[in-house]
Image 1 (cartoon, rainbow, N blue to C red):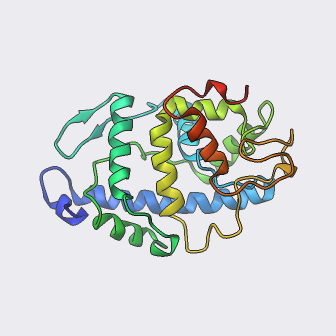
Image 2 (image 1 turned 90 degrees about the horizontal axis):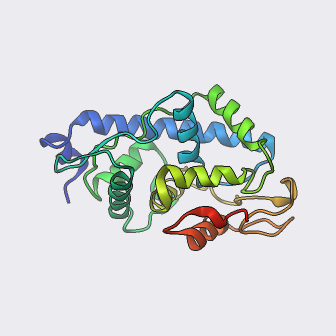
Length: 237
C-alpha cells in the first residue's frame, strides 16, 4: 500500500490534501471537546455516533449547500452519486481500519495522520468541508434536541431518518468506527455511556430500558442490526 507521503507525490494527490485532512481532524477534535462540555451541561450523555453526519447535513441545509459533494478517487474518477460516494468512503475506511485501533494508539491529529499513512493512501475526500462554529453548533444542537419528543439518546426520531437519508448505513458505520476508535484522546471513553435514560424525557432510548445506562455501542448496534441495508422506517414505531 502507498503511504500518504507517496500519494502526495503522485499525480492522483497532493500534499495540500494531506494538510487539509490534518486540519479537519484538528477541527473535529476541538468540535468534539466543545460538544462534550455543552452536552454535559445539558445532561445528554452519549457518544454521538450518528451526530457528525446528521449535524453536518443540518448545517449544509441551513447554508444552502449540497448534502454531499463530489469525490475524486485515486484513479481520477469523479464521483457525484451519493450511492457511489458512500461505497467509496466505506471501502476506504474498511481498508484504513482493517486492523482495530486502540485509543492509546492515537492521541493527536498528527498521530492519526501517521497511522493512516501506514495503512492506505487517502482518496481525495471533499465531504468534510464545512464544520460549524461553536455558536452555530450550540444553536442547532439545542433546537434539535428540544424538537418533538426525545427518543434516540436525546434526539428525536427525525434525526435518525436524517442520518440514513444523508449517508446510508454503511457510511454511518464507517464514520462511527473511525471516530470512536481513532480520534479521541487516550482514556476518553472510559466510564462513558451512550445514554442515561433517567435523564431523558420518555424514559426509553433504543439500546437500553428506562433508567438504565446503556453499554457503549448498544444503541448503534441496535440500529445497525435492525435497519442495516434498508430504510429506518421501523425506528420509533
